[in-house]
Length: 237
Ligand SMILES: [Ca+2]
Ligand SMILES: [Ca+2]
Image 1 (cartoon, rainbow, N blue to C red):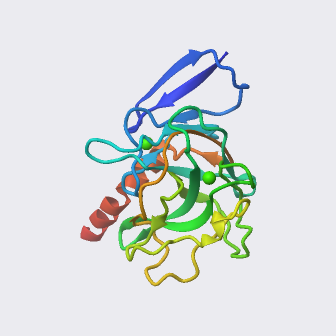
Image 2: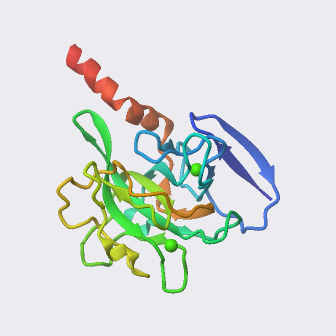
């Protein structure tokens, strides 16, 4: 028996204890909860737990009455780049045919706006497995790698890829080969920033195991979300 902390967007957290079949692991777990994690940097859930993060659980719900749920984005902090690893453990429920993909973006500020720049992508960690995994660096020869700092992790279903403002893929299509962690696309005219998604994809439930990752601490989250406003106020002085 061990404690899990289930956190909802906005910093609201309820700690509760339950029996679980999984081995006890250090660090808090994050649950997407009832409020859908968005598909862009501006609508991503901010993981604001303290200390090393253990897992991220959520759901791509597929079609909806108003908008669909085909991508989930989370903001997190890479605290140990060398030890960085995110893997999708298993699909546990949802429709058959869910073939998840994962995309990692570095968070940056551009003209006072928070942006997400393509770093790493994977579809299948190995041949014969639909489950993706990301390590500290690309293995497609692009040289892309993870450093310390703020990142956005996105999960989608096969067929749904991130695109830039011109609608171009931001990742090298090398990542579609099993076992390949791909880097950014080679010099897309529209750049490497996440703007939208190419299409709806497959969908289902997921659980990510994460290493080398921590939550964005509360003061950091506030600063992150308020960066543009703070910068504007400073200029006015
Ligand atoms: Ca979702
Ligand atoms: Ca896959």
